[in-house]
Image (cartoon, rainbow, N blue to C red; front, side, top):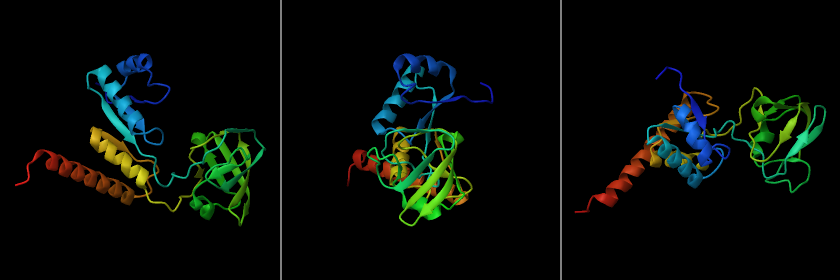
Amino acid sequence: MGKVKIIATIGPASEKPEVLRELIKYVDGIRINFSHGNTEEWRSRISNAKGFRGGDIAVLGDLRGGPGGVRTGSMKPITLNVGDSVEFRLADKSNGGGFVPIPSPSFFRVITIDDVIVMNDGRLRLRVDKVSANNAVLTALTAGGTISQEKAVVIKGKDYPLPILDDYDREALRFAVEVGMDYVGISHVRSSDDIDEVRTELRSSVATGLSSWLRLRVPTP
């Protein structure tokens, strides 16, 4: 096996048995994106991939990442062109209101006029033209595209004052330990402290799992 490894993300587009069976022939490992789906879906994708390869395949679980953890709320997709304006508001959902809901107050604490918001892996960019006191931000598109729900919202050059892990990420790490994943990916790392925190949480999950295993299998004197 060469030094370059090929990792394929397994999701709705690649989990179909006829697709996955063929894909697995050409990769060294699979990636489970913890930003989307749930434990049942993740478990099914891992099981199917290993089944097609006889268990011989590496599995990576990719955490959402705290500093980049601000995401759009529930909304219908909005397609915008360069020069169009769109407003971001503090809300869990838009109910078709034509604005972009942001459930996290941290976004509005950090954002300032002339900031650049980057979405869709950099393909969509917005310039901040106005910041209102009532947690509303007016932006103009400098690179168009579609904004939809559960998409990461990054402010260029800035970090959100968020911990690297939240309860969702901790649950994902417990799942990674439970199913015996080989690797964990951490997004938007700011310092070595972020890595240490994830390692500490992993050790805690391993210790908790071992404790449960012992309680189930070792009789109490």
